[in-house]
Image 1: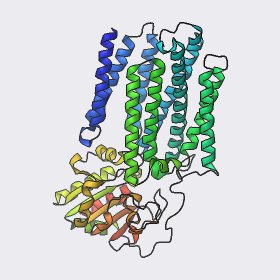
Image 2: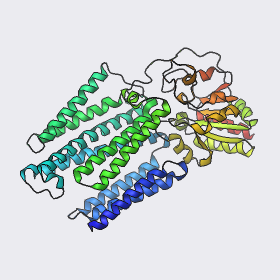
Image 3: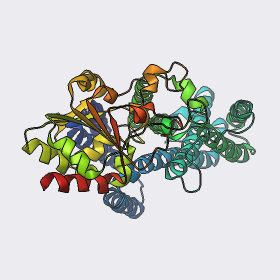
Image 4: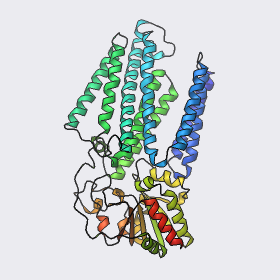
Length: 475
């Protein structure tokens, strides 16, 4: 049975890798997700088959409850709240690792590994060296799990902007506080690992979980909304690392491999997104971005357009590029955008969609929204593939994006976003900027695009404004 289980684990790991590879392209992402799900199902079946003495009533109840909850979340959570759901799922992964670390300690504490007690499920805990290794993995599982859980919850609250504001929360002396709490967490972790077989171990581990949880909150609160895609990706990496540590605690090779895969891919994605913003990962973690700086003077000579005027401009355009942003997600305008694109194509207009890597509130946010509206994959173009085409484009329609189209990144060396790769919509013949107001984006700075001669501000809710444009175009 164990040989078959090992073969199943290898197959599951291969499906995880293949699924992750297929997630790299929009066209194959759904199939990649399905393959990874098959791999997870295979891993669960193999794990259950090799563990005797399980309470099947609890196992079945857990599987049913989790399946029902997952299916409900997939259907009930709106696309605008997808970043919050992803952050929450990252947090639940961290919580699972935290709880496993604590619960495994209590089960092992009844049979202390250093006292020669039997611990058949944990071969690493059979010798002194193995026991030290086991203690280290328990401590790391608790620390990383707690940081991931509380950090993800704080990310959810910042994304919702209800109980906690989305802009950076900068505490006085925050760097000294963070370093102090981090050092205290490491010191307490070392102490907890040293006394893991002693009577003070339980108290030490619980205190460690609380202190690591405080560290998770402190690490996320100074990070502003503009950096949230990176934060979500990084927390996803943390959840993978926590899962890998739990694999060592439970002596489950597949959990170690899967956790390491998630951790590594999350770090790589975080680095790629930082590159897309021309910022270092360290600068993102330090936080404070969007709290101040940059040109904040009043706008001058701003021109606006009504839905009727926008329709007239689009009616005569031979080429149009749509640039979606978080405003499209908030107004749920993706379906109207798709209908408008179809109406323009029926008139012979060349229509494409430009996707910036950090547009929205999570990695791939705009891709998910447009996929929900069944926008063809071959119409989606990444920044590097389409940026050179704006010069020959007649109309660029920007829906709720701000910082990712801000020419200050190119023109103003003193701007907080200086050097950040942007979509060069300002090079188009005409820019229709669909936005509720002249308020700044999450970077908290002025966008000089609004003052350019080729830019027309289309004030209003994205869905409502574009619906009126579509009706004018049809009439």
